Image 1 (cartoon, rainbow, N blue to C red):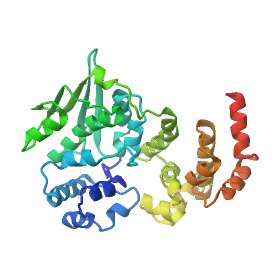
Image 2 (image 1 turned 60 degrees about the vertical axis):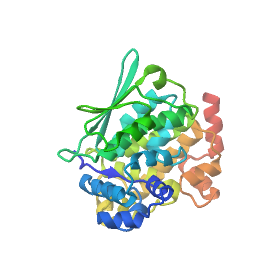
Image 3 (image 1 turned 30 degrees about the horizontal axis):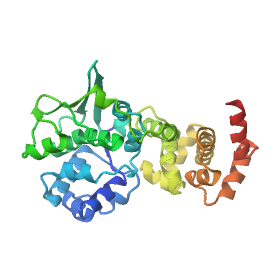
Image 4 (image 1 turned 180 degrees about the horizontal axis):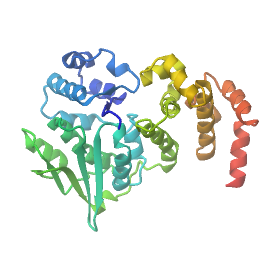
Length: 333
């Protein structure tokens, strides 16, 4: 079983800027590294994450912080799970996809229950005996409504909202949700089936087909049974588009020394360069067969400095060209 952690992504920096909150002040209050938000794929243990959240609340001095965060959240913010949700055909499918990949974000389980007339999302925090901050729970509940509104561009409203601890000021949250918040034994939000299946204007199954393999690999990297080679591949999938595909960058992501990484993957019968090559080739084939991305764009996504380097590498891997693979795929489709 892997140790519970919460993920921080680049969306944090954007949200804090939009809220005019100075990140350094938040981190200083929490006793966390000043460069935390600049670290690639930073993850925090629950007690550190909750301390960060408490510091954010204190720095903002806003009892309606969860609402402000949802209002600042934009569909163009590249959080892979948010992106996957908005690519979905409707809120029900979005929730089912989020539920599958929720552990990429933190030790939270999302259960989606559908009846003949309703759809209920229930959140369970898995880092007991710690209790999540009330505002964090509220944010997660509000997020489900925000996804529906961003996807449909309509004022989606839930039927009921339940949480174990009510906010000190309930009315603004009920105004935002368009529904009453009730005290109960669980954290849940229920929609009519009609709302939950209303088509998303942001639906894009082609983009989902591009990013789903990456999400699957990132999820695999969290599994206790994942080999070091699988963890390296998952880190590369995340790092390639930014050009951070060196062994130094990957060892930093995986928090191990270069020597340890090399020793472990050699024991598994491979090498860093071999994993990098195989990952790039697999991704290149995926992009060529599943999308209409131009080879120059694929070159960028694979972390090459310029397209000619990608063309030469692809020919050495496959004996053919990217265009040749795409033409062959169209003939057999």
